[in-house]
Length: 243
Image (cartoon, rainbow, N blue to C red):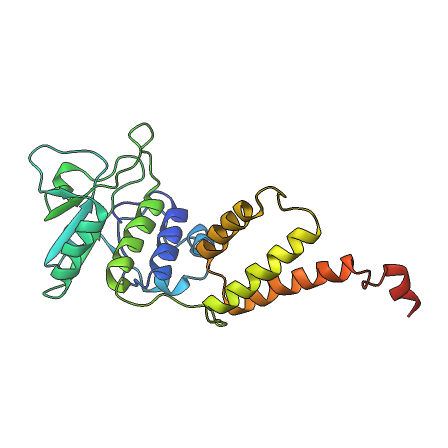
């Protein structure tokens, strides 16, 4: 981050980095750092702030970097190539296998100067709405950190629910449809002239939903409860209280 003016943005940047697994924060001439606002906005990412390195010049911050990508909200004349975040992360990931890489973010109000962008091998442009492209620097950092994280984990399986049930089988579905049609008939919900039309629509609906075994048991339980009510076998609240 080049000359960040607000300590809160430094803290928010640290939080954005930590949530996406990044740790190396470099600050060039920050106006307020260290600062209580940075710690508050970091929301637990204190280690990122404690490890952050403060530099007196951009050249010092970029020393040893083999590839530098700078964020710019505006098109620049005589600049290096510009890309949207996702394809740019492909390039960044490839470059990182060869040498250290850096992502360069500018000031809150004015961004990076042309001279600072001259240090970059690639520009990254976040395609915000042209009608209101005012993206907070910490928000921009979160977007880029997410895109980099996505590049690294896209081939991994996302977390799955701890409780999984097999999908209801075809015969279980048929038993449910028969039960559903029976109950709908008893409450006079089916059209007498064409009862199959509604059942066909319900089949499409439930087949699209693809309920699992547990969900099917719940649906069958609801239908069984309706039948108890129709048969007068449900206990009234008053009767239940007397027991």
